[in-house]
Image 1: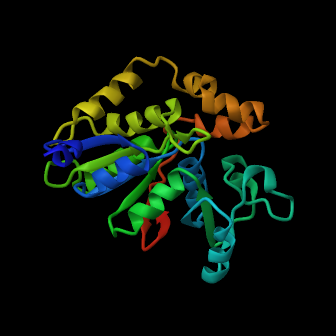
Image 2: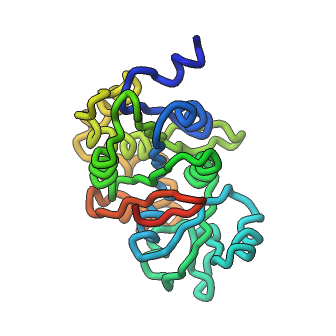
Length: 251
């Protein structure tokens, strides 16, 4: 009974956090939407918008080996990027780096969640503030959002030093922006989804909130203000990155 309840039954649009939440909703939803505003899904939107195919991969040294096997370029951490290898998790870097056919993009949160969900064979969409409304429109056009074909929206969150989930403002607002575009679906919103949406409704200036939250300040103080500024652009993109056979490309 507890397991069934945790899947938020009876709702057309549902909301949860992190890898565990994605696994729970992935058992019962027809599609998952992963939101990692700072910065995985923002980077995916930028790269896919430039025509690149993005391979999600868990964080770690094996990403380079995997890229070699599939004939792709492996993105590196922001601080490891060089003029010779500018591809990284930085959305700002990906706006100017040479476009490549295939990019392996590892991250500890959104990418790991996407890769795990992809292994189940279910459709996975990457959403951020830039494309939230476009994602919502696409999902509705595909017929998702009923109780028979529910949508699971996953806020990736961040990590504490001990590896546990740190819920994050930017991902809650990004996920809520998708839920806002789904608020009229036939199956309605779960209580969890409605509460996430309430946070968005009570935030008068979403870009300011993302800039001022812990994750935003961390990037700004680390010298990556440009990444935050790209991520806080709201509904500027019609790109819907859909994960099929392990690769994100335009839906």
